[in-house]
Image (cartoon, rainbow, N blue to C red; front, side):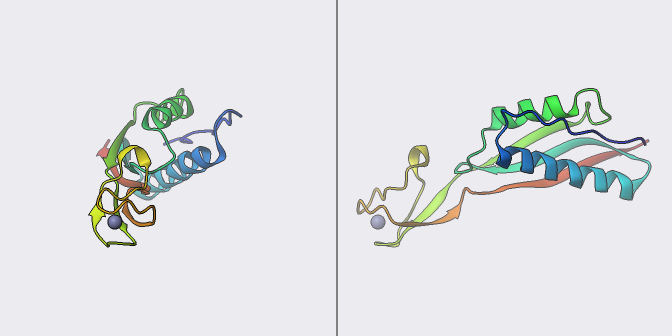
Length: 129
Ligand SMILES: [Zn+2]
């Protein structure tokens, strides 16, 4: 197993997106080093609906980062997690539409986010060579 990839940094990417993609690459690289003979075939990333990251943009970035490297054949799968918040006024739970926090029960803007801000690598599938 050679070097997995060299990160090529393109300025139009936001810092946050770069950090996430970079950290995914770090985790994949570590996994490959631990397993020796295993080849990474698929990655699964959990992404919350309230995340500022766009699934299409993540896929595009993954493709350009992995192009021409050992990771080029690795499929990146995104598992989207729907958003759920709890109203701070009436304490009822609801799913915000279009990332807007506005309680459909009492009209309050205050809410605690229960799910939807996730962005993490949750699975790495490997194949023994
Ligand atoms: Zn409410």
